[in-house]
Image (cartoon, rainbow, N blue to C red):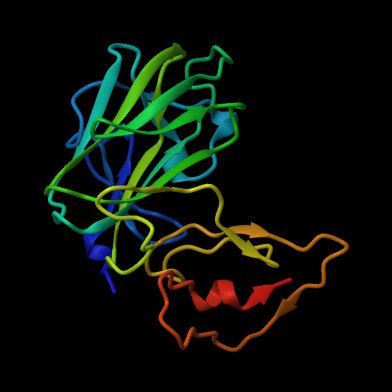
Length: 231
């Protein structure tokens, strides 16, 4: 199991020099000043604030390509990299941008902001070829790129075998089905986010308080807390 000591958790646009512990996960978050030398720190509008890591952003009004450099990684190791975005009308314009993000020079995905209070999460599982990697925000001419937080989690190389040196996996959706609670660290030691997906009227929810283990070769290591509910 990878220790949380090897996690990288960055609060982008945090205006101070010291970090903090996240209220939910108790993981330490640090300011982003040591990872990038471009962009502007901005606070989101007060009516949108929803937790420490959503209180501010770093925006990039200048330049087409602005990159965070993540160092002290292990070449050849598989990583989960997650970028979070909540606009919060930080610029007072009520205009929601569309922009791209890249891993090094490779396209990751397009980020489409639809509402000021709706968080957007981009997540990729990829093998790192060197001891550092860049996460880059690309201005495509449809508004100013910005970012709320950036998280890096090492994974065992046996996990997610569809992701290797020649291809990566980009998250579509990950759900905690049959539950009204989301799951992440420490219930998931890899700090994946399992979004709550409660039962519809036509569904039959099932649950157990017993620990649920996979007794066969497990390439995904779904945590017991997620496996305890279903439909």
